[in-house]
Amino acid sequence: MNQPFIETNATTRPRIFDCDIHPAHKSASTLFPYMEQRWVEHMQTFGTHIRQALVGQLAYPRMTANGMRMDAKPEVGPPGSDLQMLRDQHLDPLGIEIGNLIALSRGGMEERNPDLAAAMSYASNEWQIAEWLEPEPRLRGGIVVAQDNPEAAVAEIERLAGDKRFVQVIMSTRPYETPGSRKYWPIYRAAAEAGLPIGLHPVGFSNGKPSTGTGWPSFYFQEHYTFVPSAEALVTSLVIDGVFEAFPKLKVAIIEGGFSWIPALGWRMDKHFDTFHKEVPHLKRKPSEYMKEHFWWSTQPMEEPKKPRDIVDVIDWIGWDRLMYSSDYPHWDYDDAYRIFRFPVEPHQREAVLSGNASKLYGYA
Image (cartoon, rainbow, N blue to C red; front, side, top):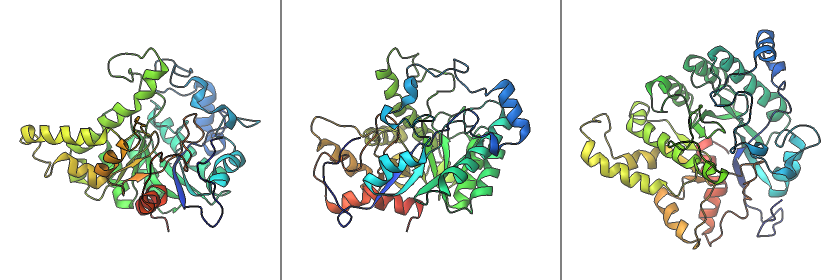
């Protein structure tokens, strides 16, 4: 475990809200108690059919060792599957007041069979309630939706929107079509009407397509970087396709996509908007203005320049009111809340990133 830079006690600890905790299934049958028997038998007979190159295999190099830190492995199941270990390793020692679950495994986001995807989505959300949210009041859920089955996704949002333990709608940054496609607009409409942000998080697979956009990477070094271009592409799509003009109250959290690229993307889109604005008359403002109004960003994975203070200029452009602490527990590149700032920050800036911004976005007291 990483040790905090600053020794703290109960009276001096800051409030900490963690926006990215990954719960895992103990086995392939974990969701069966929450599924109709038809789908249990289907999965036992045929398995799942996700969009990836290797059926039934973990993608190399992205998911080697499941992307997990080895000290988080419990006696039974993979890292992230044991609630008590989550408490012992993360919630208790760091004093996490609220932690958002981002349930990516077998949630139906990448399943090709649309009806099975809907069943997996329902089961994933019921599993979150029964095995995480009810026994641990510090945790909050994200409504996992089968995004390529928008009708089912909307039904799942409407089913759970009244449960205050769910604070956002979870979608993948690598859907079948670009995120701004009108195929997904019913999901955005349902989320906006429910007052729920959309939480966009990368997944380990890339819909069977090379994650780089230029071919399959040779090394994990290359693969690990690809979360950034996928996040850039989705921001561009959401803005230019007019999602925020259609749904002006929609809020989006980009989770685990980095953030040093955000100013440059805003500048580039603004430059092109000056040239191409007649092609996109549905956009009433410059792209960077939509970015600053509708997006929130997680700290992990934070870029670390040789001069740590250089990152301050980036955050100044993004806005200190838009960055939220995330640990990515139990993955190997986990970030300790007491180590994310390797440079001096003002107390109000630290408070905003560690808890204040998430509190405003997700409605925490």
